[in-house]
Length: 116
Length: 114
Image 1 (tube, rainbow over the protein chains, first blue to last red):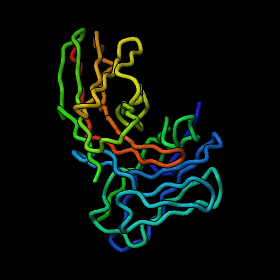
Image 2: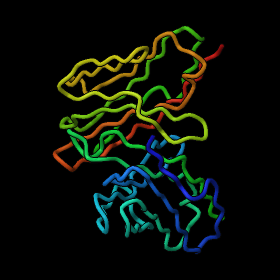
Image 3: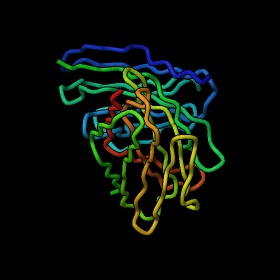
Image 4: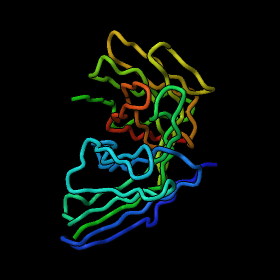
């Protein structure tokens, strides 16, 4: 089974702190994604990556950056955390499908981040 | 921009009844429509998907229908069981080769009462 592991289940940080959310997948997938999940808003794409050292902005990249130095690891960075970044963060990976790159995403269990 | 609207936001059914969740999308070029199920404390998991060249797809107790003209697609769960209780997300994507982003709906919390 594909496993996508997020380093923390719960995280509490202070406003202005630099926050790192880590994600590791064990299936040699080329594609990795970061989403945030908020009640009533569904899942919104922050950033994604098709390959090592490559990154693409999603729909809500402001206030975030990412790093992909190794194929299996994709990090989300909050440069200066703010209270409106309190949310559930979900990492996902996929392998390029026969149709497109966003077929069959495998998600981690999520990190609930609270910024106080 | 692209948008996916999902209804209802919550749905409660008796075990054994059917459940239907509906989504509409705004981008007429969308051609891929997956459904994800998120159980408590877990990440979403793909349960079924449909492409724009197909009108209906079924997998045991779940089925998805697509109406391209109306830009509307639905998830149907028959003979619901308590383990079907979860949050369900629809999504739509316009995909060309290696590109394309999934746009998710707002989610539906399904409760199946024993």
